[in-house]
Picture (spheres, rainbow over the protein chains, first blue to last red):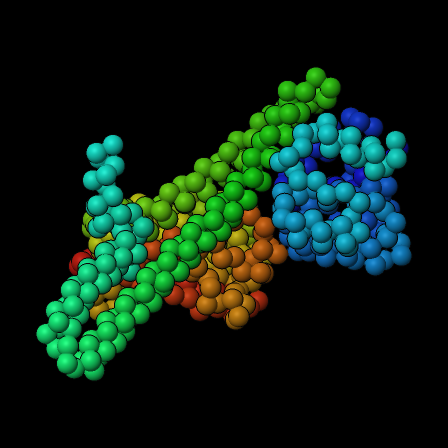
Length: 122
Length: 320
């Protein structure tokens, strides 16, 4: 079973999307802030990281930068899932190594699951 | 149609709509400039016709008129700048508000998508949890919209603070009892010292509640891992001084000057909690100033913050 780390501080979203991912056949690990997310990425070695940007303790960009600098985590694909939609933010995330950038409000759950499947290689 | 034409000539009305005084309003300044140009053209003609033998005088008049027009043109440019600035602030404001509303809206949207989906099933034992989530997120949006409405009304000056005699001690006790459960859940004790005399203040009780609610709520949220919040009330001359002291994260020195600004949120506050409208302290400031009081704070990073405000008192009730 492929493992997905979901770093998101909105409990409601973690609940809804986490349940959907589980039903789609993934093992989901939740992190409520950037620090926990980074720690779990190292210890759990997930197959994919879904990363919000506006996170407590450590901003999503810092998490992404640290993930990509670390030899242990640099190859894990990252999907940024956020509500920030400025071009500068999108460019920065891609530059830092995010595979895909999704604005939450513009996608429905099925579309996001599709992106997850494509990124994880199914 | 006729009304529209009449409206075009209602210069003071148009200036009020922009929120500018007459002397900062482009339409009014254009009319003044037009009148000066007409007046000075006629005057120059008359002077020229009369003193044709002295061209220096005509030149002087032209020079004075040019200087006048230059000053007015400068003022007009400044007023356009002000309008442009106001419009820029408005779009920034809309940007921030829409972002603040997006998070709870996304939560509701996705939760409902799961609930309504034929493909995904919500575990039976989790259905209630989903509805609680939706309810909480709707409450978040309502809170933000309420704050925005208060700000807009206070800024426009259409929110009159209905001043009444309020027993400050009673009101504070009521607010504390409302927050005690929340504080205990975070291992925080709230201590209240009402002082020797309980002042009767002249203010709008619902507005005062809003201020105290915001200050207590902040004190609890930014006090990490347990601690104490001390609320004090004292009377000094014709004022009541309220203070709420926390042992929380404090406000970084470089950010202290922005703390009462609209939508400002300190960096360490963001690290603690990404939610929050950034309107609470701005609302407090508007209310206290409108009630004839002052609001300020003392803070040290990682030590805590004390917020103070004053309100004019009416009389004092002697404590038995």
